[in-house]
Image (cartoon, rainbow, N blue to C red; front, side, top):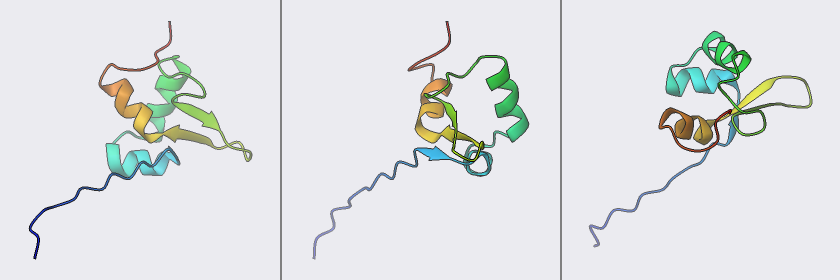
Length: 73
């Protein structure tokens, strides 16, 4: 019997703001405020789905928090 552990990584990609709130603690108001203040880049951090709901890229928000990746000029 092997005692080696394997680690799986699941990337969530584009998610509803409820997921961001649940897993990162950022509220919809916080996200919208920062989006309207041009802190996030459209099509990188957020985009609208065909129904008009603003969706957020889970991993790109991690990059933004860490100071990596795209940021508005």
